[in-house]
Amino acid sequence: MATVILVRHGRTTANATGVLAGRAVGVSLDQMGREQAALTADRLAAVPVIGVVSSPLERCQQTAQLILARQAGTPYAPVDSDLTECDYGQWQGRALSDLASEDLWSVVQSQPSAVVFPGGESMAAMQARAVAAIRRHDADFEAEYGPGAVWVAVSHGDIIKSILADALGMHLDLFQRISVGPASVSIVNYGASRPSVYATNTEAGDLSWLSNGIRSGDAPVGGGAGQKTA
Figure 1 (spheres, rainbow, N blue to C red):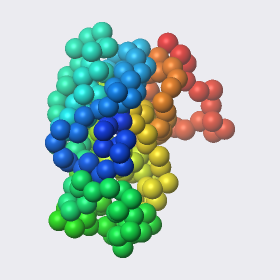
Figure 2: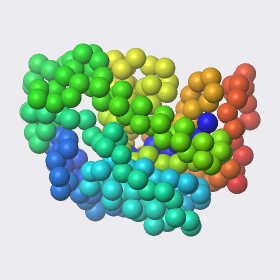
Figure 3: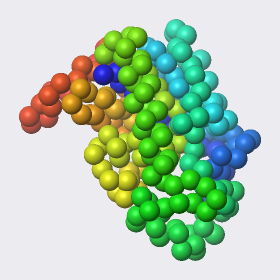
Figure 4: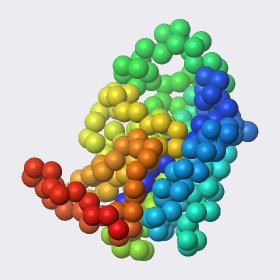
């Protein structure tokens, strides 16, 4: 299958002040967030991606535009609402320090599969629609460009964590063990028999080895020799 590079948006004004932005409009990258996203765009410039699919929220659109601006070609750049942030309902716009005193907070930490945010979405539904969207785009890109295709999905922390949990074969209740920092890069290849996770939460490093895509197959016993740089 094709290879997806999962990119979280850069830091926002809400992130910096400890507020759960959710789906609120007008939440932009702050100066540090723009610098983070620019660094990620520079890393991805070495990889000719065939698509950059983004959440519709402003912070992801800003991050995606920086990535697109550093690509030599003109990748397909759709917006997909299934990659948007979790609907946190009545939690949206509140300080994380206040939310930590809610009874639901401990459930979010230990049993997210049971969480339904008041007036919002369940975390299980969040994962289901995000994973379905990633796998749908991945199959479409492979069908059109072949198994060596590499594409980017720009989304949000909990969304990417839930996608990685699925790829790793982890129950959603374990997804809080995964960290996904602002503008971080994670890499998943959906092989014929199972997904393979090649990177999680990276903020630096050469990505030119992705230039020719990943040819999936059996996992090498003992770990293998690694990827060749371009």
